[in-house]
Image 1 (cartoon, rainbow, N blue to C red):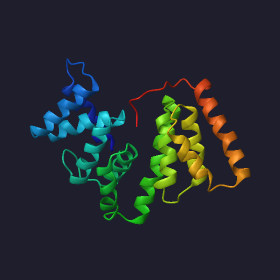
Image 2 (image 1 turned 45 degrees about the vertical axis):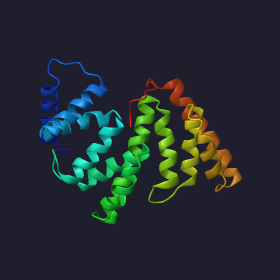
Image 3 (image 1 turned 180 degrees about the vertical axis):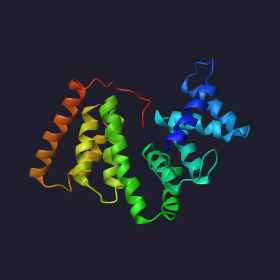
Image 4 (image 1 turned 30 degrees about the horizontal axis):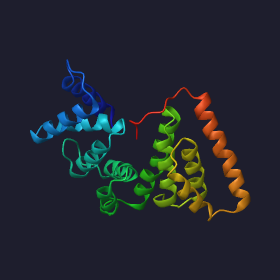
Length: 211
């Protein structure tokens, strides 16, 4: 977003929330109401702020609004970014739409956006000690990265299992079959270092509400 757009978002955010303290779901419902009333720019701000916190429905809505240019300038790059984040949240509707958006972008631009996804997820993992982001990193590198990377997938699945995402065990072991034994040992050591450093030496706290 441009500086001008950020300033507008800030002003609208304050206007929408003046005198109110809302839960995320109440805030989301307000965004839906604003959208239904045709106040698209204000509903966009609601969904944008909630998407930054990882609200799944808001991420879906934001991808669509960027794609259509509703409440914001049409932006296929931003639409693809949020669509991929939506896919990683398990939304099958977004999975179908990824290829449609990609068809409107060059390979260089697609690669540019693809490179942003692991950066976003790793930042979220580090800042909030969010094991779900580690799991999504594993899933990204196994299934969606422009260059499928089983080693990175194994690494992040391993971190997520240590963080309590036990459904990642089978996925970790599956990608592990594609990796040489010596490399597995190296990746296990690295995963332990990442998990230990983030758990015991990072001030971030585990949270459910992030991308």
